[in-house]
Length: 265
Image 1 (cartoon, one colour):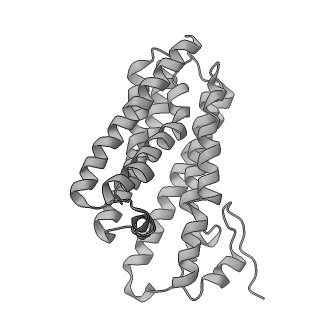
Image 2 (cartoon, rainbow, N blue to C red):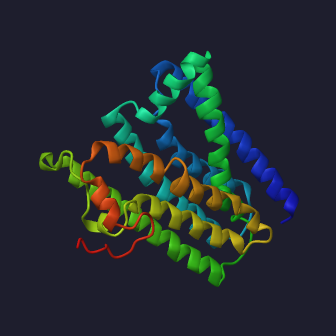
């Protein structure tokens, strides 16, 4: 294994990611909706993992574990988000984006390509670097084992949190209410925290490989977007406007990392 082979793999996967998202852009032009891209963000990472698995001749155990963890995470989340899109329709985040761009002369086709599909293809490739570079190497040491445990905890946390929220939303009596039970009692974003654990865990697996530390921008960017950009902050702004009890929930519940709720004295 050489650093050249890593560069070749990363370059191939970048081209693959852009090509995949260009095909999805053509689908969006027919649907006049880009909201399904969130589901294919997760599924695209699965494609990156499988492509890397097929490209690299490394340790079979390492490759199977790394790819398998990504598949379990990505397929579960991807189909969950796809079902949510089919149920809820157009995502307001994207409709608001196009509404802001239209007066500036951007039609749907150009806006969706320049501001949605092309940048997201590159960012998806960036975040998935751990499952690309981590395929190299023959053995799994203590760092990789810690990463596996962390990723499994993240998958379980996210899966349980999403399931609890789905049950809550299906109950008509909860319309307009704030979900504050189960894992949502300890963090306002158990699904985002689960993502955080998964991708830092996968990075730890990759970090054992020579030059695997080059995958660090992936989990760093994901952490920033979950905690500071399009994840928790954007979601919370909308909930603060639509849920009367959300301010009280915020005052007593940890924003990201799980912790015991504050007393409501």
